[in-house]
Length: 231
Image (cartoon, rainbow, N blue to C red; front, side, top):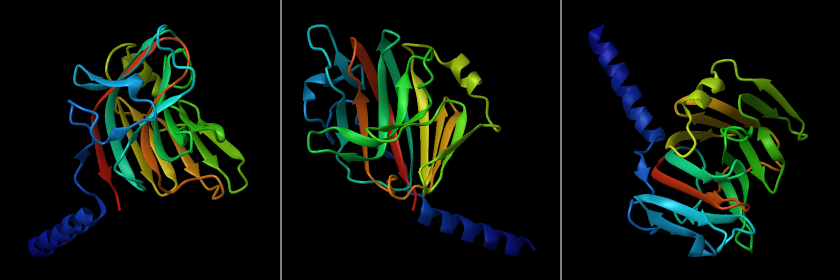
């Protein structure tokens, strides 16, 4: 009995390694090696973090994107820490399975970063596409014809994540995308989910990028960026 149990466990462990690679760090904490933006003047490394800054002297008039140069990714789990400072309109995000347009604008799935007074923090948006896909606290099923059915998450309480979130303090995202299901976790608590059946609009692979949104002076930082590819 014990021998069979150990054999089964060994098979499970060996099989799991075929489907999940080790987590790879995407940022060395010192430089922007492996990252690129059309306008690098907004991007730097400060205090061991990728830092995007807009000021009155150097405003951000249209959205800026820093793209990881590791190529397209399909199924994955991404973890990172972030913090954002500015007015209540300060906005940023993490682009996943996205596309780069000729002008450098990155379009596609975006896990939003914003002041918690807005409904965007922890939500999923479609940059230059279908717009809001899943508000914070909701699971959205996108049907083949593009209609969306949103229902409250029942297995998690996103309000708890909001209580633990402090503006200007580090928070953590875990973003998991497998096949057509995108799940977002803020500080360990699920805040949104999208199941996308609309083949004409969805992307099954794409680039990873960080966003600095146009608007008032803002500073947004990212660190401890780890990617695990899932096959």
